[in-house]
Length: 67
Image (cartoon, rainbow, N blue to C red; front, side):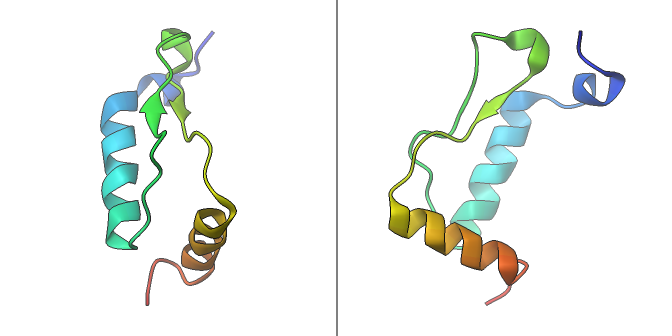
């Protein structure tokens, strides 16, 4: 069962928000999508990425998104 907090977020809006934030850092996750197999869980699937993209994502998180 989904918690109240999980129910408050639209997974499609969350995915687009994440996509925009990542684009602002110059990062693209090609497999980013909403997991439609489990709609009650409202999961966003980050997918698989190449190692260099994972390193760039980690660097962006460490910097707080600031260059």
